[in-house]
Amino acid sequence: MEDSPAQGEIRRLLARFQVKDDQAASELLQRFYRELHEIAVRYMRQERSDHTLQPTALVHEAYIRLVGYDQLNWQGKSHFLGMAARTMRRILVEHARRKKAKKRGGGVTIFGLRDIDAGIEESINYDLVELNEALEWLEKLNQRQAQIIDLRFFGGLSVQESAEILGVSEKTVKNDVRFALAWLKSRLTP
Image 1 (tube, rainbow, N blue to C red):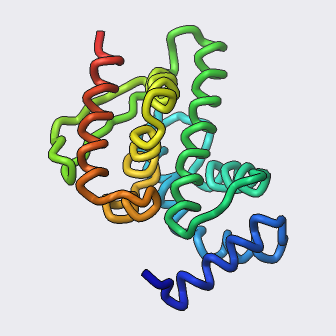
Image 2 (image 1 turned 135 degrees about the horizontal axis):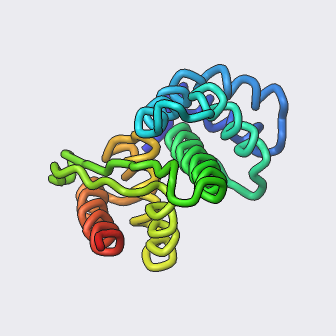
């Protein structure tokens, strides 16, 4: 499948971003800011109302980290947004760990996972720090399934976009979501 002119332009922009082109970094932020902010807002909806991070700060912190990634071959817009979502999750986990360390047992963030597209209609709620640890385990067992959870739930990408990034069928994405959520549930349910 050949790139559309817009996709080709984004790939060229990402290639320039990869080699630390400051102008490309600025253009990417301008082009994707709205979508990055939407991802951050989705995350922050699940956080406590008194959380010290705001969506804008989360976007900027994630973007600073993305600029610092070396040796990452950007595959396109969906890959960029998926990595941004994963980076935002890591920032929130770090924040939750610091908060939890200061106030043992308090400040737990509950994060809900639900995917109607994959036939999972029940909402599964997890402590974000525990969920992150389980996802790190899952990544060791099945990297693709962990990536799909990142793309679908944290990045807000569709089944089709996730399939495109990972080079698999939409059916594989749906099956992997079902399996990964079942595994997470069994791992995190007492």
